[in-house]
Amino acid sequence: MERILKDRHIKRKVLVVDDESINREILGNMLQDGYDVAYAQNGQEALDKLKSGEETFSLILLDLLMPVMDGKEVLKICREDPALSGIPVIVLTQEKEAEVDSIRAGADDFISKPYSMPEVIRARCERIIDLYEKKSLIDSAQTDPLTGLYSSEFFFEYIKRLEKYDDGAMDAIVMDIEHFHLINEIYGRDEGDRILEKIADILKKEAEDSFGIACRFAADTFYLYHSAMEDHGALVDRIIKEMGDVSLSPAKIRLRIGVNRAVDRNETPQLWFDHAKYACDGLRRDYTGNLAYYDSRLNDRHLYQAKLIHDIDRSIEDHDFVVYFQPKYGIQGDRPQLRSAEALIRWKHRELGMTSPGDFIPLFEENGLVQKLDRFVWEEAAAQVAAWKEKFGITIPVSVNVSRIDIYDPKLEERLLGIIEKNSLTSKELYLEITESAYSDDAARLIEVVKNLREKGFRIEMDDFGSGYSSLNMLTTIPIDVLKMDMKFVRNMLKDEKSLKLCELVMDISRFLEVPVVAEGVEEKAQLDRLKDMGCEIIQGFYFSKPLPAEEFEELIIKEKSDSVS
Ligand code: C2E
Ligand code: MG
Ligand code: MG
Image 1 (spheres, helix red, strand yellow):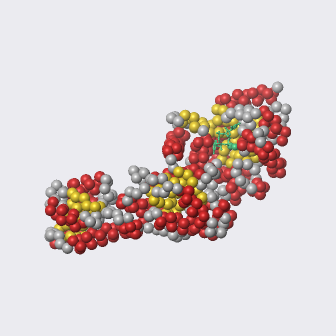
Image 2 (tube, rainbow, N blue to C red):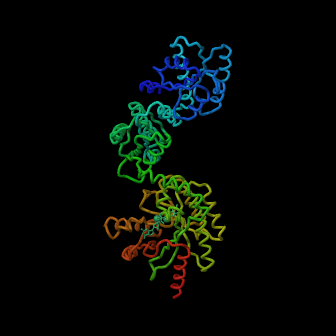
Image 3 (cartoon, rainbow, N blue to C red):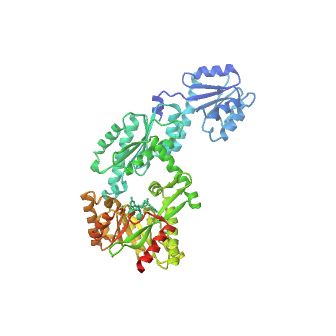
């Protein structure tokens, strides 16, 4: 810090408060070479300057006897105001007693009038400023024991200071490691630690070379504050090249780097890095590269998502979320038979209009809010099954989506059983769809949760099978009741040979596991026929129906009842 501030010839700002212009002038002349000096003629003017926040002062030189508001009053206010208490105050006095009084009142030092020996005065100013800066840094300084990088508190404190004195263009850069938990699981924690240490070393060096700073913000997330550069690709290349030294092949480590270029000084440092992180997180679903910039398009999306997050609670209360139902038909008999339905959430947003789950579910999955929605959907779905049972005398089981985060909810089973009981249903009447990607997180936990739910009678469907990367080995250990084939295979099955082969492969796996397959996304008769030939039992897709509001879905139930009679 010191090195950087000195290297950059940064001039601190000092406020000289004295009602006599000659005194202001003498002090000003003494200090102006080393400091940027501002003046106030009385206490009130000094406070106005200090509180306006337009300038950041490193020291106040304060006369005690002044008209309008005297120095004692200013000192008192400065010591009580948290925004000002971090600025050291040196009192300017003529009387000996006042020196002791003012130190008691919170002054840090005093200088006696008339002013003599400019070197002594300059040295005192410098010492006090230095002391304050060091103290506040020490207060926030903590390093991460693993990597030796600074804590995030220190990191932001440092940036705040640096920024006061220097307005050169800087970039906020966030870097993280894809699937870091998997590296830990597969190669062991020591290997994981080694990778983190290596990245930290690389970033430390980058920071030093650029008058910047780096920190480890979270487990595998690093922040780098760096003087603005043209080509971040070169930075990425340097990092990847250096990563080649760790024992794992760099091809196995995917780094994601988000950059907020030439940060906007009107925003807070936290926001600069939030933006860079947002760009970085966006790379999760994008494998085209490992570098992303925060730009106006991302900014719009960020704001849109912030709005969705902000509005979720009110929308639940106002019933702006509605559950739609999409039928699943058995296709192996003479005629398609309505077997069950999937509950799919819809958001009728008051300002944004109908919002697709594709927009908000992944977002709420990331921040955990999806749990609120899921519980709402489970309640609504169960109530609907019960209502149809009452109205039509038959059960149309409804499957609900269970997010991966729900798996970690210790009360999951209790909640689901509670919902069933409240609606006088059995666990056979509410199916649970768990997406395949949940299966890679914590296999042991998932197996246990699924086993317990099955023991209670719930039927477990593995959703989007083929989209994630659960191993075959995993499939044989996890007890499931249904495979839902990922929509992308069906979409292309008649267009390309590979997708067709994959559909056949899923059918083979289902026979091996002795569970039926639900094919999603079936839109055409030709797809249905082909799937039927392959032995697929159940179909869900626009060919039969889009997801419908409950009232419209009832028409399908009525039709089913009349078809089954005739
Ligand atoms: P999913 O669970 O795999 O649901 C199937 C999605 O495929 C639904 O999209 C459905 O409308 C769509 N779909 C069905 N048939 C066809 C078809 O023939 N063609 C095409 N193009 N699409 C079809 P939707 O409703 O937009 O939901 C998207 C995803 O959002 C769902 O995928 C699910 O992962 C998630 N989701 C929806 N509701 C909930 C919920 O209540 N909780 C959770 N956790 N996730 C939900
Ligand atoms: Mg589903
Ligand atoms: Mg699905």
